[in-house]
Amino acid sequence: MPALVFDCDGVLADTERYGHLPAFNQTFEEFGLPVRWSDRDYAEKVKVGGGKERMKTLLTPAFVAEAGLPTDPAALDDEVARWHRRKTEIYTGIIAGGAVPPRPGVRRIAAEADAAGWTLAVASTSAEPSVRSVLDLAAGPELAARFGVFAGDIVPRKKPAPDIYEFALAHLGLAPSDVIVIEDSHNGMRAALDAGLGCVVTTSAYTRQEDFTGALLVVTSLGDPVPVGNGTEEITAEVLSDPLGWDARPFLRLADLEFLLAAAPRTD
Image (tube, rainbow, N blue to C red; front, side, top):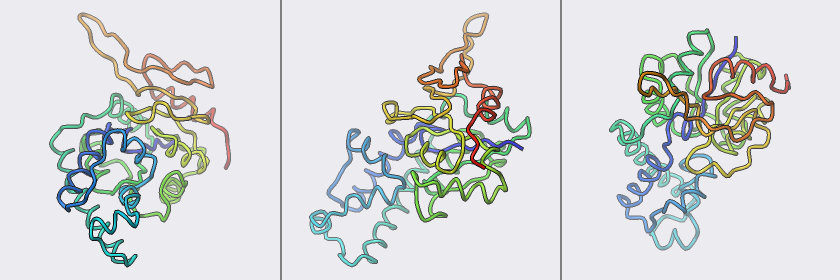
């Protein structure tokens, strides 16, 4: 049985710029930390997989001294964990408040896949409560309940390592040839490819200029039909790279994923 596995941030919703970044900065403010990330700063931080890992990039000797943080590694890890728990609370509140809209096409194509009997899952390096809040937003609670969720610290290495995808495959009992992944970043794509999975990329706020060599298809979004007047104007997805020449326009459909899954290189 085929499976469709989504990344979370940037794929289900454009959460990095409008959810995670303000949540990090509010956390820094609440803990009295001498840092605020600009949009330009965060464009670099998103290349680091995992929220705690992004926070740990701050921990230079100078920052630790300025912030009055402990120098003992275990105590410093505990402090970062405190920051991250609070950041997750702030972030889930932002998502629940409806400030971050879901990305086009996610609910539509997930519903099509579910109706066709596909397995649905999310595989993300974000904390599980954060992932579930975004999944509920993007898919709706009823459809979200049909997803497997693999997130956070259940694997030792974050993307671009393939661990989260290998974990999901093992727990779902799937072969790589059964699975197609939707990602938005080079790191996420690399994780999928190194797990032997075919990958479609839908670029997001910080990722359009990244290298997606190896993806089966790169689009600006999954897209949705947009009703206009008495008819329907089917737009919203621009194809950026189409190495197989499938021409998945005007928006991505389940039939497109079926073709791409069949055409993906086999490693199993």
